[in-house]
Structures are given as C-alpha cells and as structure tokens.
Amino acid sequence: MDRYAFLSFYKCTHQVGKFVGSDTWSNVLRESWFFNNWKELLVPVSLSTFLLLGLKGYLDEQFCQVEDLQDEASPNFVEEVVTLFFKDSGRLMSNIEQALEKYPRDFNRWDTYMQQLKGSCSSIGASRMKNECMSFRDSCGQGNVEGCMRSFQKVKREHAVLRQKLESYFQLLRQAGPAGAATRPVM
Image (cartoon, rainbow, N blue to C red; front, side, top):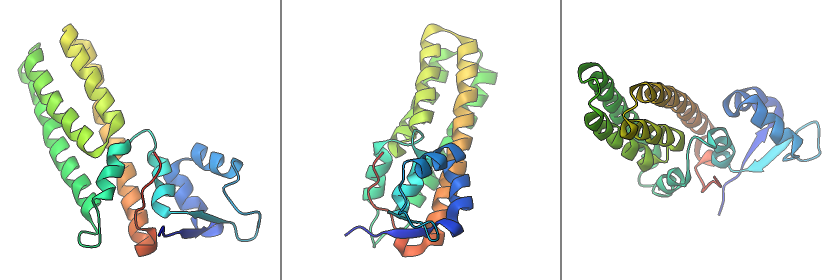
C-alpha cells in the first residue's frame, strides 16, 4: 500500500519550492496537482515521488532500483549508498585532477579513471554526471585536451549540484518521517 504524505501548501511552499526549483513548482501549480480548496491545498502524492521531481534529469531509473532495495531491515540503505558514492566519486575526481596535471596528454590514463567514475555514476543512476563522463571519454578518444578539461569542469559542477540536491532530498525525507518513506517514483 502506498503511503501518502499530505503536504500543506502553506507550510511547504517555500521549502519545497526551493528544492524542486521555481520553474518546476510553477508547473506543479499550473498542472493542477492540488485540490480546488484554496484555503488548505493538499498534494496527494508520495513525498518521495514528489521530491524526486527536483531530481528529474539528474537521476535515472537506476536510482529507483536502488530505492527498491531499501526495506525495514535497512531503512537508510539509499542514503548510505549515496554517501558511499560521494566518497568514492570524490576520490576518483581527485585522481583525475592529479592525472590531468601530472600526465599531460595521457589520454589512456585519463580515460581509465573516468571510466571508473562513469561506472560509479551508473551504479546510483547519476545520469547527468554519467553523460558528462561519456563526453570526457569521447574527448579522450579524439585526443582533445581542451574538450577533456571542459568536460571535467562540467563533471565537477554536476557532482556538486547532485550532492546538494540529494542532501536536500534526504533532509526533507528525514523531516517527513515514516510517512515520507520512499515508494517507487516515476522517473
């Protein structure tokens, strides 16, 4: 049975609007996801699904599969996996940065490190990061140093944005408590 979190419009507009972004929030309002009661507008969707709207495009179906592995025996499984991802990806990005400095034009080395990072991104469904990793690898294959540097900057930027969004996502889920428990979202 799906659990529903009924969010009071008055209490959550500011916080959720910041999380999902004003454009997404405007679309939610425009698409009439709310009941017609203007005094106490409620959203009948699972909190996890609703919050994942703010991550649409950043995560793919793989993240949903990771969420499916979470159960009562391991209620923090997804957050633990994401924490490990950020620890591992930070280490890999540091290795890539060092390789870019120490081994100029060693495209094979760069590509090997980026392949590891791409695999980590794929394992949690970090689609935007994965796409930038593929762009970096394409530049390596073409022997394009500038393309590699540009792509790596984008990888770092996507990493930072994803970290911030997932931290907000987990914070809001923790605040909601068990009623906000993850249900399979539509990505």
